Length: 259
Image (cartoon, rainbow, N blue to C red; front, side):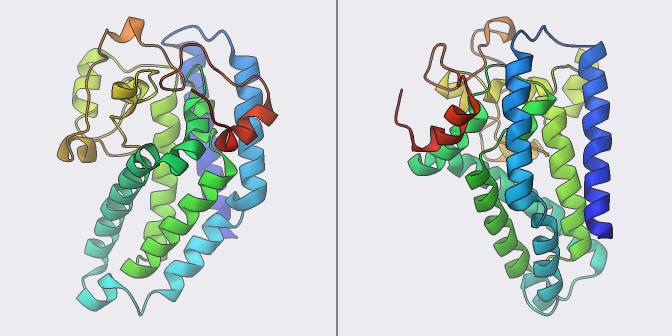
């Protein structure tokens, strides 16, 4: 119960803070926010009902059950080393999970719900189809079990992942002199914005959610939009104007074939 309360409290605090940031210092005007927020928050509610309530508990139980099993238990490392290694490995896992969701056709059919948002703001961070949330849950649970990741690291990483996802989807931007340094380590809104381009070459870059080092290391980092930030068009890759017009269309998108 404490675990769940900490996660929810952190989510509400970060979401509220970033909402305040983009409300008072927006990077641009959002013209479709009412419909988008309806879709995005509806997906958040559906995801919460389906797995988000049990996800923290399940991952924590897996972490507790793997304390005498897994790579870290075999290596017998000190706790601080296991903790830091767990955060890094889980973040690397999310990077590759995200990259595979772009590369494998049936996974992309699910993930494209996230990319169908025609504008970006903090609500875009929760725009995931329930099927993707469930798949991600099992992938993380398997990693936690095989590596023997401690429950403390699971809790901290989950908070970091959610906070960073909300941060890099926010409709705001860091000052240029700060952006240059921050994006060397952490994914920023301007960096992740390129990933949401309608141009496939741009959408298939900048896969990181928390640390930007994975994009740099695995050669998928793009610092600038092909035609400049002002001409960057947000939305589903390889489409010109497509955007779902109803929650039903969002939910059936993984099963719909279209260009």
